[in-house]
Amino acid sequence: MSELAVRFEHITKRFPGVQALSDVSLDIAAGSVHALCGENGAGKSTLGKILAGIHRPDSGRVIIHGAAVDFATPRDALAAGVGMVHQELAFCDNLSVAENLCLGALPARRGMLRRSEMRRRAVAMLAEIGADLDVTRRLGDLPIAQQQVVQIAAAVGSGARILVFDEPTSSLTQHEAERLYGLIDRLKQRGVTCIYVSHRMPEVFRLCDTVTVLRDGRHVATRPAPELTEAEIVRLMIGRDMAEYFPTQTDVVNAAELLRVRELSSPGKLYDISFSVRAGEIVGLAGLVGAGRSEIAAALFGLDPHARGEIEVRGKRVDIARPADAIRHGVALVPEDRKLQALVPLETCAHNTTLPILPRLSTLSWIHRGRERAIVDDYFARLRVRAASPDVLVSALSGGNQQKVVLARWLAARSTVLILDEPTRGVDVGAKAEIHGLVGKLAAEGAAILLISSELPELLRLATRILVVREGRLAGEVPASSATQDGLLRLMAGLT
Image (cartoon, rainbow, N blue to C red; front, side, top):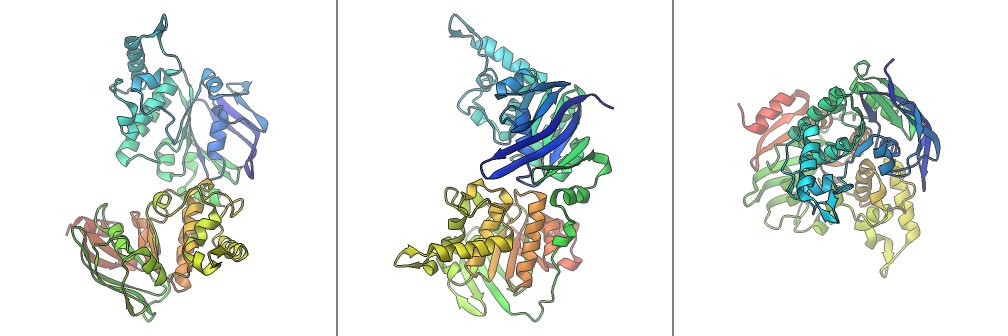
């Protein structure tokens, strides 16, 4: 049996209104890459932060290389050889790379900063992990991937032999992520123990020796990665097979046409786009980045003042010049960036849900709170929104539950045409499965759904048929039953 670097014994941690961890015990082998997997809110990051000295457990203990430790601060953890690479970078953007790397111990003589020595130390710290950056550059001017390299160099350069990576690729491109994987491989070869918090299955199997799954703050399983499949990890994370969430396709040939678009155009963006969506149908919209998918959604929802064309809803021609017109006609948009475009972060879940229907819930500008709460409770139960209360701030929820709040908003508004732009972006696999099941259920209940996604497996799994957009034009339509990823990619790229 390999030497243990870390042992968690009966770790319990509670925050106001949330049981983050409950009696969690597990071992992490020295020199390994150990994955912590689970849905958002499962306790992965909390466990990593306890090891890094950011949180202290309410009960239980942490043992590092055979000795029990009790860290009051991250500085204590770093002194014991534990560092953390955060999902949100914790550095000073306005300072140079060298200043950030030496911030905890600036070299000085007689009260004067020794800049040449600071730069020398910074170069040495970067060289330690095989990185070569201009240490005089302002940190905020660097790409996110290079900022993460600086964060890793700071941890390793301070003597850390145990590193916690908390969702490190969440803001990286695939190319940048591959460079990070190579760096983790080199750290492993040098005997550094890496604890990797992630819900992205491909990188878990690419990097990790062992996988621990947490669910609702409890330890579910710890197994060698080669003995697991993606489907098994997902089942452990959500407590059931993903197949239970797959929608059942229904026959929509004779269903009513809820949305008809003719010659939708916008200067420089869209050119004569025409299609229809029937009740109970999920129509996928595929295309490369910049092909015009989100532009179609914006035009249909009244966000593009230059858009022209004919739109029919439930067989009647409508004019949609602004979002209020779309909402009035039963057209809803779940936008690509929920935090920037859909949610009011400093408002409660309840208020975010009822925003479009406030006139329906008020008399002389006074909102009937009882009626509002009844509607919110109903849709939160139907969509299984996990929140301590509808009165908590929506910013406190996980990404998957925030997305459910946006969907609850449009269901409360009685929308019959739903435009979903990247509905599962940034959510964990468990929430993704639930959202897939929810989309299928909404279609089965008679909604017409236009589904925009960069994930071709998602379109192939959910859609009845798939429209391919290329350079602002409709390049083709493929029945989902006969579509393949390769065929869609070729159509998207304009290859014969």
